[in-house]
Length: 309
Image (tube, rainbow, N blue to C red; front, side):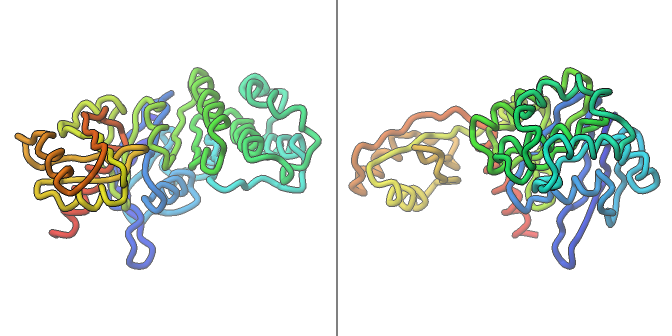
């Protein structure tokens, strides 16, 4: 097992950032930690990369315990934090050589590992890192995290604030890196990126809601979700929330996603209700369930249980 986490908890004053979470990541797996800002992703990454000590629980990375063997772990992992943290005044090549030297290696020794990424920024090798675009900074940071050929690679929200084209390129790079046998743990608030991982953990308020492959998580979701649209979207949302048997209502792209609490629900009941409330061009049809839909449902259930307790 490349990463194992058992009953890990961490609090900041009265705020519980991680609440007794447990999961495992297999060797060579591309594992995603999916959740919004404030869910606990960065706290977990800092514990696993030995930058923070948990209040409770045990965690191992590359079969090494994060507290007792922190020095060995730091030599064996690559870490790309959410905020660009390289030396802004050094050039691309100077940053890369600096990180290689820290780990007792050279750019040439592990060039094959970073080659596909580095050739994209090589034309800018003499440019200061602070003058790079967001996508180029991202590629440089990834090269620096890989230069010592780590066993495990931690990427904390690597595509936040990056344009869609660069996001796609980045995930293509991760897929290629995966073939080198490197275990990758990546966190992201973007639900659409979940489908690109081998397995994922959905996290909210420091608790894991579900751990499995993206497809298995979606397949287990039994509730039918409907796409609903009409001319006045704002008024549509308000009226849907007033429908007696509604369970969930939220915006989803050009539609409103609607779930009903009745197993015998008929969309025609809802259509008639909306027409009675003077909505025009009403359209209701079954939606394809996504990871985001499952997350919304699980997060809502978790919130309800927390309130009851």
